Length: 262
Image (spheres, helix red, strand yellow):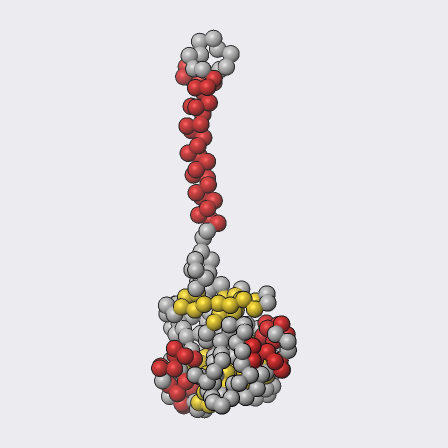
């Protein structure tokens, strides 16, 4: 108690400390407190909330790394999704056998495959997922999602409409798009769309090199599991949205996925 009175009773005539000494003493105790509070603030501010690293690269649960591109107000992943795991680490069923792929539709069950059941197509075209895998809401890395029909529409409108948007999104040349087509492509957005084809209800594969087809997260609301999807073509400049209302095979098909940032 005497020490307390000596340090802080400014009216005491017995106070052996000068005013400047008291300030130094107080700073000694205040400074660490400020430092600790600052570190706690920074720790909370810098806490990672998505799967992006400091360079802007995105990593899925398999360790596949993607870059991104900003188009208008949207940030899109460059490259089709390749993950074999949901963003919670759960495995997505790999389905190669045609009959087993068809059975997924009748059981409302998730699945994915590589085009022609050939994993060599993974690097260039990514995976083909059925609608039930998309519907889980867990396909894209944390902080990203499968775009809605409205988000694809926003992309098309920003690029001048459906009739011309595809040319601005497609990879140039014929390394992946079939020759002699794709002369309209500019890829001025850096989206680098490739024609990965699709898998139908019966497990058959179609149109690699000719068409790129991507899921939306939007059901039409007209018929059971009818879903919007968007296409680009080798021979045109268009980016077109389809719903194929009443066609049960749509939700059972295998399409590519591009993710957009939350």
